[in-house]
Length: 242
Ligand code: GLP
Image (cartoon, rainbow, N blue to C red; front, side, top):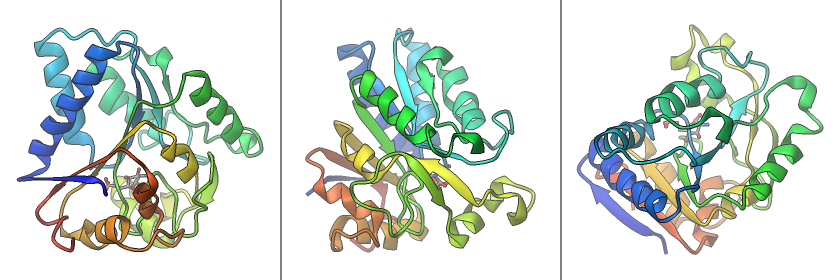
């Protein structure tokens, strides 16, 4: 069973997770972080930013791998995960951009980008700490329901629900890409420590399915039940169906 930490709010979660990440970096200055996008991890990134600057923590050797990317958005589109990771994480935390990787969402890479990303993670020695959010469909990364528990980085089709959920970042749902490239559930399971975050009532059902439902490709988040080291940091509302 995962360790479940219930905190008052997202800000408190951010400081708990930032503590864990700072401890990791102090132990291992070239730590490999698994980076998630979406709104959920933002308090973690802001708490980390504060601590790194206040304590002059050396992050020059920290490495990172993003979970996923839209397919077909230009890399410099403000909502590409490449842009988001650089805007929300790399620049404010002062990480070395050369050490931060985001899957290649260029359509020309359909046959190769997934394997290349897997090879890069392997070459880095694997991910030490993977930050995860969860979608209302139960997805982690962009592994929508039906994703194989053994899957590796590959293209996926986004569900209508996920496109609707993410339309808030775009002018309209028509602009939300239909496809993505995402680390697989198998990839995520190889990270040494998973930190799953969820806030608000809207995540309660997906979180309960992930932590207490049957392990099934229908609930991709349930794959975390197979992982030996999972920390779940949630508010009361997200924990309300546990
Ligand atoms: C996004 C990302 C996921 C994220 C999830 C939840 O689309 N691909 O990595 O965890 O959906 O998003 P949010 O944190 O904004 O609720």
